[in-house]
Length: 298
Image (cartoon, rainbow, N blue to C red; front, side):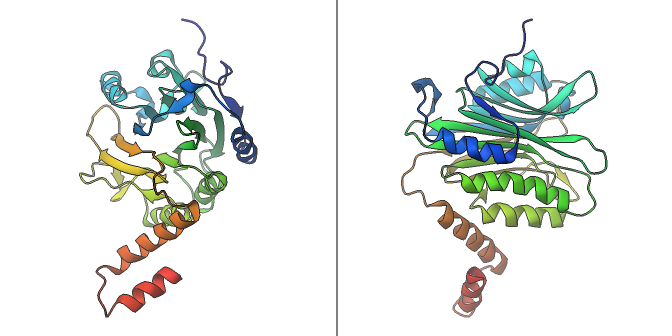
């Protein structure tokens, strides 16, 4: 087989290797125009899945089935090989852990080429192994930009400092982006403290989490590990099918990118915080209304 040729190597996509440089490149991209084959339609389907380094029996079959239903595929613990990168016409890889023989990382594939690809790593503080982040920008048919973030979060750490830093590097990019955002991956939110931090930081950037009515997400200590968060996007359908070919179940999300009556990022951030506050308080009655307003304001 020939060499693996990503969008970056083919010259279709600008590659950036640091969070600060990513912000600058995304700003530059806003002024550029791209051919029609870059344009995403308003309705697209996404899959996010940690595939356990493709070790599981029937992984190839299951992934092929999911891939046929999806327009953008975000994989964690993916291998850099012909079988996986051949799932879609266009792909971008962010290298993470390597044992010297196999290179794993996060892989973002799509039916359309991307305009910008940023990737970077954060080190596991105990194991010193890298955890990768992929930030990919796409053009929507009306000229706006979709930011698709694929992250495999730090797992083993004493305290939250390293986990928070990995999230904050991505959030800094999101806060500079004016268009829709998808943030998905294995976020290793296995504790209440991690889950609380994840909610607070992403809501501050105007993101809301996808709800899964039949929630078969993989859990540890009762907490879901995998997530899809969005901003400026309507979610039309979600699903978490169960598979035995990985130690995680995949997340399927159908979204509408059309711009009708979409609020600004600042409004989205306020709405996300208000939604969280209302969820904590519960049913609103005349007696509890002052408490609701107080929580929302503060």
